[in-house]
Length: 153
Image (cartoon, rainbow, N blue to C red; front, side):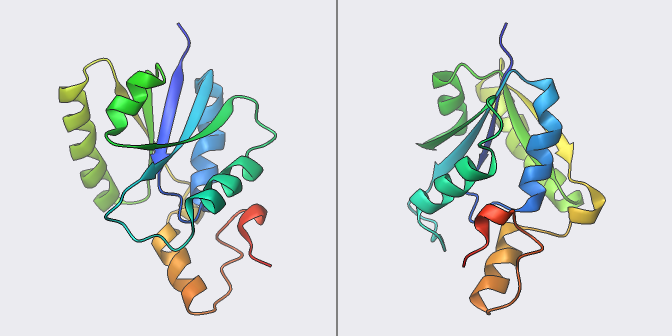
């Protein structure tokens, strides 16, 4: 059986924390799909095309990684992709409580889909996309929080 994981997110923008999770998960899976979710109710700082491009450029050296966009329920997208796992990163206890509830609901809706949690490396655990967006909006130096491919020239 091919082990396929989906790492869903808005990646607005992708951070070094995201990169850390993906790179550490690579040995466990045959394929990782970075799934950029579309949510009509959410206001994004960066357009979908830019977020997809950043992901593709960041992970271009990894043949096991694919970048796709989707809307709707993540579990339905996982079925379409024949994915067996959802990959999620945890930075702190609040993330755990939030993600645990989603994982339990997903498991109830789709028993064949398991969620795998990775703790973000301690040195990156304070980084979130919302923090990076706030630094960018306020013209701060966000370069230490994102991969080279995201640094706006």
